[in-house]
Image 1: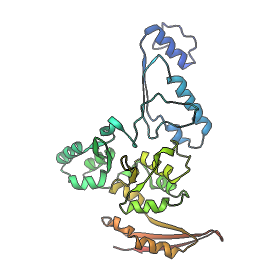
Image 2: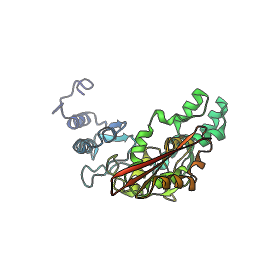
Image 3: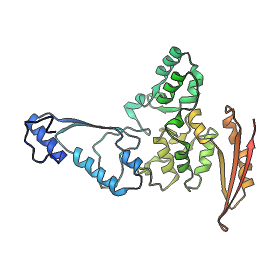
Image 4: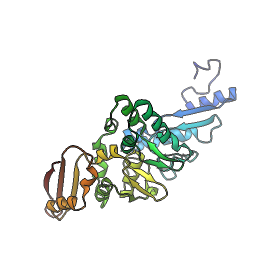
Length: 304
């Protein structure tokens, strides 16, 4: 700060808050604070609780009830962390994939924007819609994944551009968490169904999960699921994201049989959701015996 305002005398140049206050006292001009990827520490250092709390304390001390702050604008994937009464950052208006409010049209490309791009680049609108649409909010009924649309226009072909930013392994880690019913609900969504979700219990980090709802809520914020605010349900938004889920179709059982898992895949016709997929599909049935602690696995190839 001394380089920008060299003629000021500072109480303590090593203290950011005091320095900002000193400048404000002299100039009477408040600061606009912009923090991109505010939630980076919660995504990169998932289990470091002390570092996360220290960071939240820093943000609170820097921003809350400070006269030198005209506006604080933070962006990220996760909503503001809930830590009970600790490090409360309750002075923000929050817009998220659960409820983007007036910012809904800026979450991605709108129908009108995509239509214009399709005309300009000679791409089929209906096919593009099936690939990259699927997020819907009040006032913005069709929102398209922006990076994927741009890649599609640049390369002139439809395809899965999602896995260049997020990997299926990251998604699979959350699906594989041992919450009863989660895998069945994922398979139902692969087949095109919607499932109910309660987003209220989510603690806004990537490590604290108590219920299936917590995992589904995180997947909403990551873009892996589309949320219906009115009906409080989630679904897989489009073909591109569905491809991440169906890289392999797995049915897990316990104290039953791997054959039973394969039969359930066939009975529930999960593969119908993959009719547009051109490659072969592996049906994987896994059974876990709680008594012997052993797994049984059967794999069948569904050749098209």
